[in-house]
Figure 1 (cartoon, helix red, strand yellow):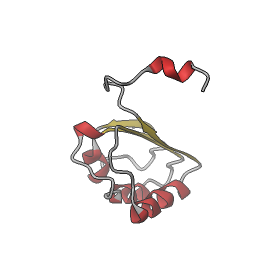
Figure 2: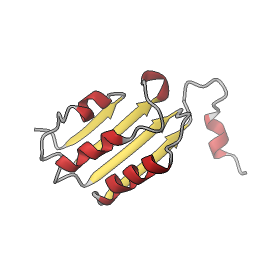
Figure 3: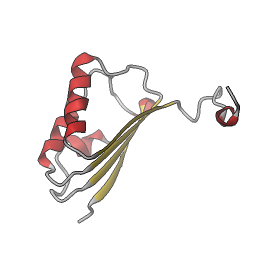
Figure 4: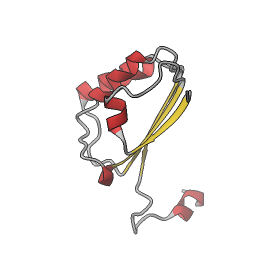
Length: 108
């Protein structure tokens, strides 16, 4: 069984408890345009409590238009406290025509 998993635009697997209990690392990549997802529904993270060996959780959210609200923030914090290595990143959509990767290297 895999111990390191990456989910891309697939919350169904998370909601269906489809992971082996020996999962140690989970990376979730979500693209707003691919999901029927609102910033207010982070209850799927509560399913992570069934993974006793989970030590690393990384979430990368592309083009999210609705940031988590107060209740959702508490759910995210509870998930973060269960792991040693936690990352939660908001990214601008790379397919956005206004996206300029070279601007990262400019002095601001």
